[in-house]
Image 1 (tube, rainbow, N blue to C red):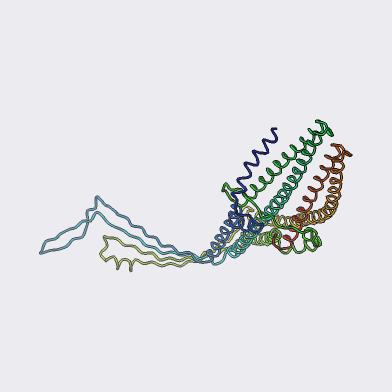
Image 2 (tube, rainbow, N blue to C red):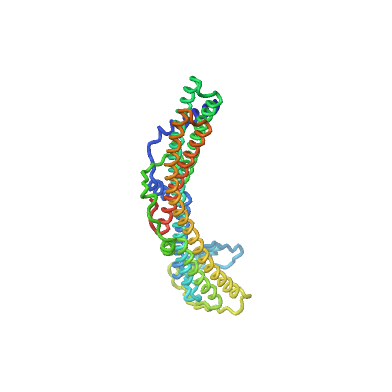
Length: 446
């Protein structure tokens, strides 16, 4: 009775949500929406924008810098006893200004003529970093698409599994009704009827469990898409033919060779090797001299001067131009250490590429094996379902005639359910792994 109540409550919870949901999401809808709204992907795109700004800054470092400054000050001489004497109508007037106002103005510039190609190599390094950030964003996008495909396939499997369990429940109900009829005419014991009722209750529970799993995976997909409304998320259930499930699987080597050319993780590892080469050159610049060109113009004014402000600005102008050369002699082995560490990073980048290639081959090999295995399983399971269905139909008829007992009937029903679930599982696993192989070849997940 408790199981029946649980089943009814669950249907009340699930039912209204199903009615209220209107949009049914295709796999393409899910992927397109995630590419626009997934937070993790948006963060990775921001990293690319940051790398772009670094590149712009490195390019700007090739240009000279220019700055202007001014300083204004007020001076006071409290014990000053000399000033400016003037004669007016035969009278000598002396004016002592104890307060003065001073101003200085300067314009200065600097240009790094050569610094061992540090600036040029920094631009190269930042350019590679920008490309790596873009590829990292593509990696994130690929990872999200693969996860969406995995969840979507699981949802399709569970949706069909719910239908299978509902069919099993209808069969159990008919068996229970038949058992009640047989009990009423004395052809079945109450113990046997209780077994049929228990089977029906177990099937009700299985439906609740299957629907719970289905909703759980729908919620996971919904969260991946960053959808936060309270409506139940529903996917569109496509028609899937045997021809699609059993479509030709490309050769393992073909998929791997194409993946090497288009997978972002491989290209990013190759860029990392180029970056390490540039880093070695950048570290070696510590042994080279640097040349800087400097220049400036300064002037000043004073309120106590006899000349006017404009005249002072002109007569006090002082211009300078300088060339500075810095030659490293001994730096406490810092440059040699930097070079050696850059070379170690170079070797590390090469090993990382080999590791990525190995991982890529392993992943493709697993997808290929799973695709082939589940195609074979699907063929076997399809035949098994047909045989189990015929066997169960025969058992049901024999049970109705009293030739088979409860145990044999329930065993036949369990065999049929197991065969149907195996067929569904192999069907969607075959499709999923085929899609992954196509995706690794550079195609879209459909």
